[in-house]
Image (tube, rainbow, N blue to C red; front, side, top):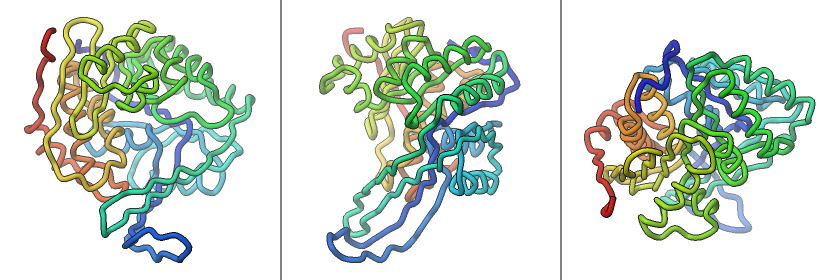
Length: 323
C-alpha cells in the first residue's frame, strides 16, 4: 500500500523516555579495578530521537518531540541543536536518563547499561498528551518509539495513539511489552518489534520462520493494524501485511561494529520511504538497508548516508515457502 501520507512531507517523532547516550572504549572489562576509558562519545538518544536524526540525514524534514527535564534535558536539546534537529520539548520535572555503552576493544563485545529515568506525574502526562496531539496534523506520519517512563502506563500509550489517529495521523509504533500490545489494540499503520520483543509477546521462543510469522500475525490481528515488520538483527526482517503473503527481507552480510541504533535506523528508513510515496515493501527494504548501515558505525553513531545507499543495492527479498 502506498500513498498513506499526503501531508507536507515532514515527520514527527515522539520519545516519551529520551536519553543521553554515552559510549566509551576500554581494553578489558574487569571487576574491582579502575578501567580508564577512551574514545568517549555523547549523543542524544531514545527511539524517536534517533529516528528523527537518521531521517534528517536521509534528507527528510523531521521534528523530535520529547518529554524532558533537568540539566541532562538541557544538554539533550543542545546536542540536537548541534545536529540541526528541530525539537519540541514537553517539559517535566524529572531528569532525563543516561545510558552507558562500554565497548571492550580486545573482544569487540558491547556492554549496555540503561540507567533509571524520570517519573512522570499524572498532571504532567495530561499536559503532555494534549501537547503531543496538538503537534499532529492530518495526513502526517508520526513515529512513537522507545520505552515508557515511570508513571506512564501502557493504557496511556494507547490513549496517545488513539488521539494521534483521531487527529488524522498515520502511526508507526516501536515499543515492547504491554505497551506494544496496547498500541496494537488501538490500531497502527506499522509496528516494529524485534524478534526478542515478539517472543515476549508470544510467550515463547520463536525458533522457526513459521513461528515468527504466526506470532506477527497474532499481533497484527489485535486491532485495525496494517502491517508488522519484525527486525531479525543480521538476518534482516519479516514484513507481514494484512493483505497478501509475508515477505522475508534479507540483509546484506556485513562485519558488525555496533548494533546500537540499528532498529531506530530501520524505522527511519521505513518512515522516509513512506513519506516519499513508496510502498510498504519498498519502505521495509530501505529500512533494512538503513539498519544494516547502522551496524557499520562505531558506538552510538547511527548510519551514514553513503553506507545506506550501498546497503540498499544488496538487500534481497523472498516469500516463505507455503505462502
